[in-house]
Length: 449
Image 1 (cartoon, helix red, strand yellow):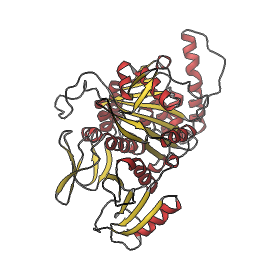
Image 2: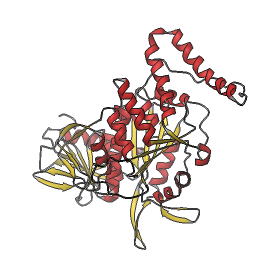
Image 3: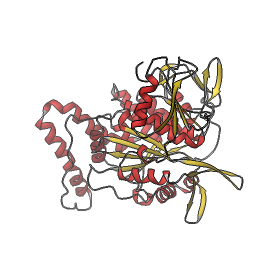
Image 4: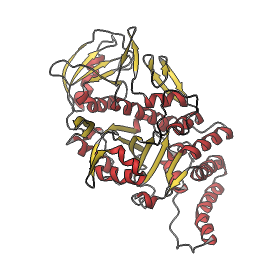
């Protein structure tokens, strides 16, 4: 998360990585020599173009403040893969959301009083500097894995320490992990508040009584408390046709909402408008964010520059394809093959994750906005991309504000992939007509509206 936040401090000219020099001598003089190339590089660029002093000075100063603020864990003890030699090479972060309640304000209700902490969110985040993009691969916390003869849910390994979770995720996925970032409940809320909130649009009023979530319809700016409630919601409801209905009230639905919040954080964070705002941000980072100690200033600066044009379209998110399993009274989800293996392979290669899903499903496209030709345009686009469109017609309503991609449980991952391909709309669980796996109801956000 520290790297994400540093992305808002962008220099007008990309800083270059310093060339490696002779190994420094141990001691205080060595520490000075290690810092000197960075300062000399920054100073040279500032001197070369005084007009960029503010932007470049800010990114360097911010990077130093961020790396100095967050708590750290030893990268060697975590068992992380050595960071790539070039700052332009892809690097993978393991982002863990801890459900510790220890530092939540006393007046925040709806979070229980559970002691300790668990890995509530497990996401692999790959930064692709050359492409200027980010990939997020979420691993459901109840995923069944067998590591060194032990079979358990993957999040259970966090109980034995961060290093055990790093090892479990790396072995299960076959992917290298270069950096580790851990944020707890209150940390996420504090960061959202420090950057001025997150903008999200709700087509219908939404609520979760257990999580104390209550959001009106339309564009909203979520404060930290509300964003956290949305991320934690397990009983998510929307007010439709005068009745409250449950939508994606499962861990997979919650994972999708968490991805949406992270994508909003990736793409909406702007420079704090005042020193006070940046101080609040550092205070949140210092108290609630933990990173590995191999994440340094040079890397933050370079990643920030490569992500300078990050948009929602350049952030790709996928939840690992899984199926439910009940075994000896324990509920798991298990990786669905071959799709899961193909997703891991695409992630390793930095290729589109959506393209890794071989089984896309049979799709019915319905017009839900009353605009002639809207459903046909969507159907043509899906056919060109390889989806099997089995029918095109009209919905029973013509007032859908948002396009819906409806699927049963087995095809939720494909539904998420289709929604991500369209670039608009949202996914819902629902019943399917015969010989149909996915239904797209084109709303007012679709073509021609």
